[in-house]
Image (tube, rainbow, N blue to C red; front, top):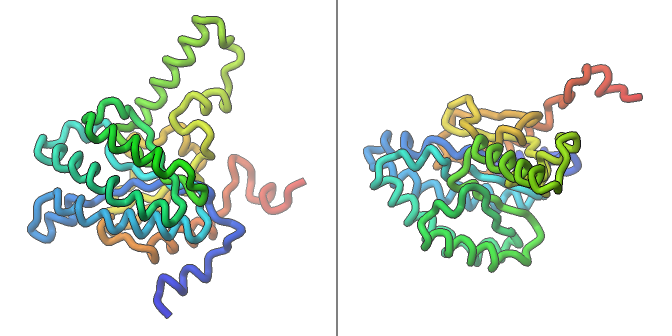
Length: 253
């Protein structure tokens, strides 16, 4: 029996995280170590996205959010950004049939209007073409940052207060969540970051408040189903206290 199958059998399906978020890091370093251009790393990472998406849907994860392109990534060399946008359009177009086969619904968050029009149009078509799927929602965070999300939510709340639709005293945790780009989705219980870096890099700043963080030294292009299962098993061995004591969690009254 392969390692991934052994690990999958150990997972408690009753204690799965509903929502997993992933910072897919290390593509450029992976390519550099092989004497290749950074774009080669991004191209090689597509298989990881496919495997992790299919594996997540298979075991019962309901939401998978991938940090695909941050607002800060626009500052990278023009050739790399152009290559990434071209790769994004091609990948989305090619993966629609696979998403439909696995009943995966595509979603996207971020400043999507800042994407090149061809990319935006391709993305909207793919979202529409997979809108009937119900097994899992795959969200791509594109031109996204946690601070951008909080800013756009704050502006919309301010506009509603100004219009008399919202009173300041009504602002609370659930209301703020409803103005974020992830409205209607549960907060991630598990965040995975590859490549050995141990930070959240402006990703889902509000939503990750109580997430379990899992860091692996493996570069994203090498991340496979077995690695996902290891992260989930690690999560299932943790005690989530949400500010309570261990005794309160173990013996609730």
